[in-house]
Amino acid sequence: MNFHKAPHTYTGEVHLNVLDLDRSVRFYQEIIGFKILKEASDKIVLTADGETPLLIIEQPENVTAKEPRRTGLYHFALLLPTRSDLGKVIVHLAKNNIPLGASDHKVSEALYLSDPDGNGIEIYADRAVNYWEWNNGNVSMSTDPLDAESIVAESAGQAWEGLPDGTIMGHIHLHVADLPEAETFYKALGFEVVSQYPQALFMSTGKYHHHIGLNTWNGVDASRPSKDSVGLQSFTLVYPTEAVLNEAIVKVEAFGATVESIEGGFMTEDPSGNRIVLRV
Image (cartoon, rainbow, N blue to C red; front, side, top):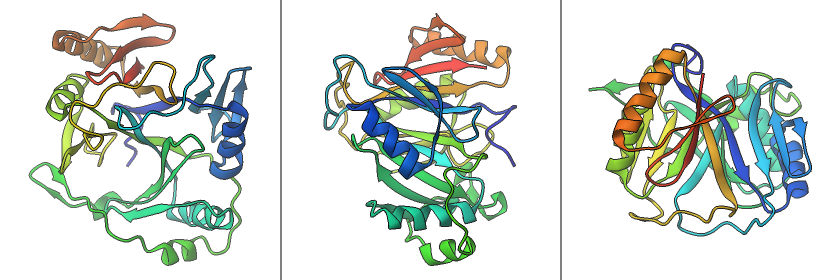
């Protein structure tokens, strides 16, 4: 089942500010496995399949280092096509001595790391939908230890060759200042709550385990980051039709958010200052 195409609304490309573009490009190519899609002096668009933009990294002219305990990016999450692909990534990252976190979430198996600027990254593979457990509209997720050995065994010694073509932006997880307010905002954009943790909740369309994660782990009422600091510049939500997008715009404007027309879509921001591109 594909939760990242119509009729669902799902996460698209993520746009990050970085301190040193050259350093970041090397990391995202050599360690994560992206290819360059478009290149400018201050901005690079990265892809897995050579066609679809997944990550944009930009070095603003007056960029400053990542600020602690702010709203913004917790992690962006790259969804791999298969468990075998995840096995190849584990071997590759281990060979490069990359510090990793790892969890079995029941619905998925995930690795966690950071880029050179401290931007959070998740790389994961989903379990088949028939293994997901639902109860009263909530999907069961956990943070159990990852069985890395069996995942690596599934890759059967195949060499890592970068991100496979079928890699997509599976979800995004954000630090916010107020969880109930953020929940109301993202409901207006068309998402529903499907799981809850202490100081966190997870939202999706079409009963995915989550397209958006929200937490207040950096503190309730956490401040917004400075405009040109390292971190999230924006992320994209892709709507299935103009009608669904327009309905979301009407609802989010009724919530009190400002929506601006930009090239290729619209721009808004959540109550914690996380900027969002809305497009079909």
